[in-house]
Amino acid sequence: MHSTRTVGLSDARPIIDVGIAEADRIGTPNNIAVADAGGSPVAHLRMDGAQLGSIEHSIDKANTSGLLRSATSDLARDSEPGGQFWGMALFGWAECWSSRAGSR
Image 1: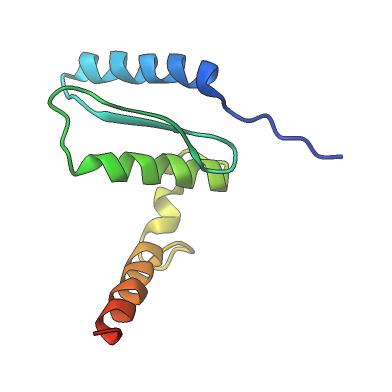
Image 2: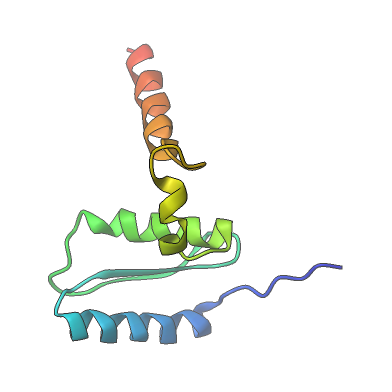
């Protein structure tokens, strides 16, 4: 039997605290998101002064990390041109956009 330990709110709080400490250390306010083993959001925090546009980005990164069981930084090479993940977001956006355009 295969079991997976998931992340709950009690796990997410210290992770967010570490994220806040790192953002303070480098002097850049951030959005910090934590996802469970299935990629679903458990917690999100937007620090004062963090970019509004990066809210969804932080949640998407946490989702990707949970689904692929890997830090998103470890996926960087596979996201470059020719890599197995190259174009995933672009193609998903194009399908969504073309669906909307066709429904007018």
